[in-house]
Image 1 (tube, rainbow, N blue to C red):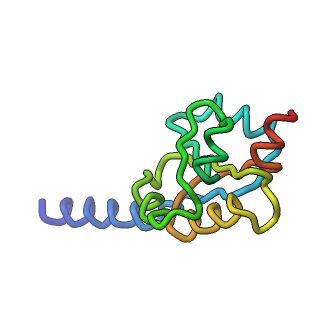
Image 2 (cartoon, rainbow, N blue to C red):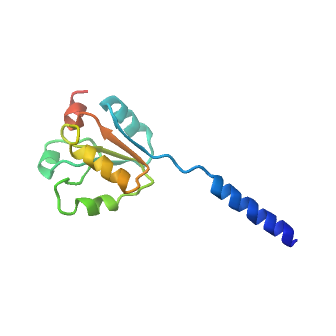
Length: 127
């Protein structure tokens, strides 16, 4: 009996150690792909990292505004669920822009799936 219990415990330990870690995704995608992912992913956290003034002029439906320049920006990011996909955009999606920096920070914080909108909100509006 003890041998069976030890064998089963060893088996469970081997299985848990051999499980592949979940692969993280962090990529910049075109507006059409961003739109598809918004429609098809479950529990998406859509972040607009522009200023409140920019956000007030128009935003993607259901986006949450977290001001990149706000004093509480980092604290707001840590409140998000790391296991749920995050989709982020800024005004123009420029290389090394606000959304790109946010995507890098989210990856650093351990978020599993992050997509950045190529071209930002301006790209979204011209799609």
